Length: 182
Image (cartoon, rainbow, N blue to C red; front, side, top):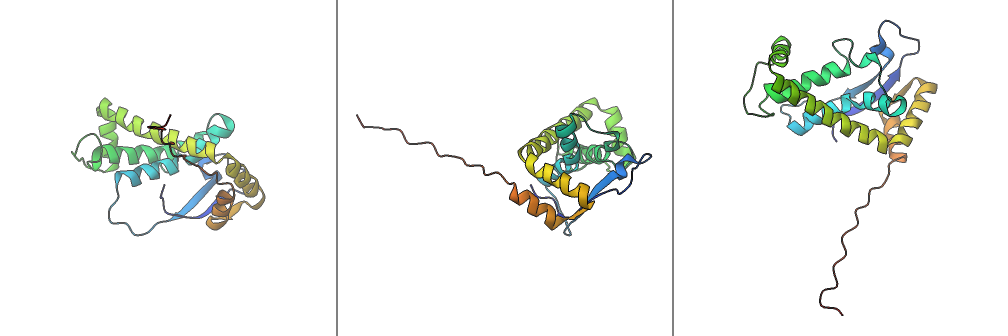
């Protein structure tokens, strides 16, 4: 999965009651992009869903900060999935629609089939994010421990922790049959 370069992750150093989405964040640096593929949009959606996937893995639920303000993760993925499915011709049809936020909201409200396709995209990427979190649970636990102490980690520190906990995936080739041997 490709999605920019992680610059840092940060936790709030104080309790945030009225703005739960401000409890922490990840900052990425992105190259100048002139065009993007469907796969790149799907990767972005999966990254946004990573925090929710981690909360679900650890606590069996996620907090209200995921959907509160306009910039919250679930709002962002809903917008991205709507653009993907209706605004760019990368969805069910090659037809494109106006991508202004109010127009996208109107499309979701008036088109149940589109709303279902958006749901399906978000659900698939959420399952993908959860799968990644489950495979990388040891790295997640160490990241949490280090963030609780330091309150901020650089992208390089995060990459180092993830790399140390990377699990190898080996695919064994099928053994050839014993054709002609008795």
